[in-house]
Amino acid sequence: MEIALGCDHGGLELKKELLPLLERAGHGIVDFGTFTEDSVDYPDFADQVCAALEENRCARGILICGTGIGMSIAANRHRHIRAALCHEAFTARMSREHNDANILCLGARVLGIAIALDIVRVWLETEFAGGRHLRRINKMG
Image (cartoon, rainbow, N blue to C red):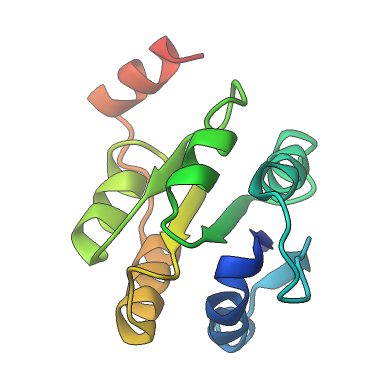
């Protein structure tokens, strides 16, 4: 699966830690940056990742900033994006199973590396359950 990645300066180090996991799992990666620790504006990267999904260039996306909150807010402004800010494996699983989240948001300053890697692994492996959940997703557009 093609995964779009984006981060601001606060998420750069965590993004670097996630790349090997995604590569080992056989996913294609489209990295929209940032690539330096220079201060940048997170909505710019959220918009690029969302566009990649909206244009069907990528199937899912991962956005990382200091807390994950800013990226989540920025991504969810897009009509067909369902961005979920997750802090552990259970919410990652439920975001996919019940909400068909197509973007995972992570907070690099609030998560340890091991937990973040677990969240990503679970989020990528979990399928959408459909059924009654699809009815709810359809109500959101």
